[in-house]
Length: 118
Image (cartoon, rainbow, N blue to C red; front, top):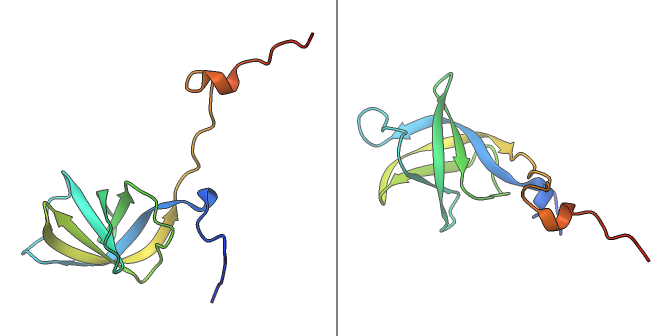
């Protein structure tokens, strides 16, 4: 067991996971294209997500949001337009890449040279 006061931190972002043990409610898997939502654990929040098939019958799921509570063994449930499509077990949480560093093109006020001192 880990106890921490700094559990949520910008350097610990998680927005993706690999999932397996797929359980679709309709015969055959649904189309993975188009808008999908995903709920993880028992919480009320549903994330918009992108889902891609991986080798071995697994899925790579990328959330449009940060969920630092993602962990192997949890269940993810997938929806489209409020209709439950099925579920999968999270096999591995994937860390999000770090945010890009500011550059002169996207943050001119940060990258501008300092004025010369008098």
